[in-house]
Image (tube, rainbow, N blue to C red):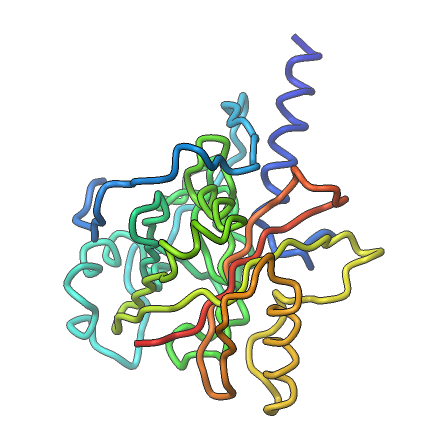
Length: 269
């Protein structure tokens, strides 16, 4: 039994690391829905992580249950998200990639980095965790770039389907991401997909730290790094002033010490 417990602990530790920001290495509701998932049968994600059941879930603190004070009234929140927001005011939006399994609420806790790494909507321990945005990003201004984190589960839930984007043919039929904040609905077009080793000894392009560009040169440098590292040429190059989102998940089935798969998109509407 001790050997089995240690094995489960090791797997859980690996899962926790994959969705977490690289710099951290030191009730029922009505929600938006999408069309049925139709993924290619011949292309499988490279991720093969399993999802063990925790034997002794750690104690958790519940999420906020009352909306905090805000400069915008509750009635400004889109009807699709009002009920969910009342259940958890850490909610900042909803992300969906049509015809994939990516269709989830998005949370942010500026004062509690990575809080939703292994917590569900209700603040309970969950090996799947939730989709969340890096604490330094301003979702509503918004920042020039919003970085999202999520686990890549063995059943392709959460951000598992992002691994299909290693194939250009999949990108060609799944080019857009829908990210709706509490107040606005936006569509984003994917322009780069790459993987990267975030082991501190070799980690050079710290993509996850790019929130707001100091100037056009900084913005152009970020875009150039993403495009040059992409698995394929999409023909899309964002321009200074465009708003971006970056989706980050683990990628351990590559010859990297500590891999991440990164999908980057620009706002088009």
